[in-house]
Length: 138
Image 1 (cartoon, rainbow, N blue to C red):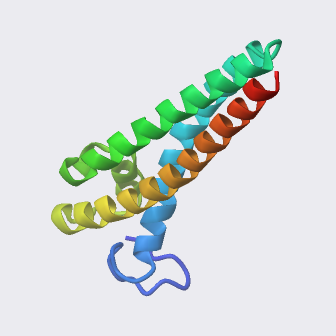
Image 2 (tube, one colour; image 1 turned 135 degrees about the vertical axis):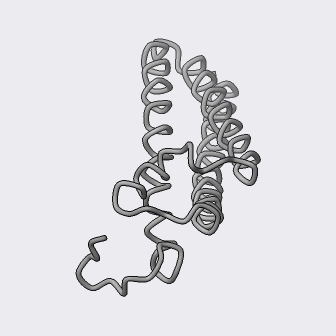
């Protein structure tokens, strides 16, 4: 096993290892949310000839994305992390212990999912607010 310069050589769930797992979880989550966001942006742009319709569609789709992220968050405690992208990223570098590493991965993944769900929910509320404002004005 190769140890990165400046690291203490501890297990991945000690000290800064949780931050490393959270960074990996961010990568996985942002990749999925990014592809969903691309689809949402394309739908909104295709409906941009009617601003209210575009905003309502965007708000509904972002709300759906928010609900999917929350649903994924509910299933994290029972998820077998050995079948996840994060496990594959960690397994590339070293052979992780199954039980302690899964607990650390679940914690990191749940923390980052919660953070992303908060931001997506706030954006959905903002879109709904803009939709209501435009529908009242027009």
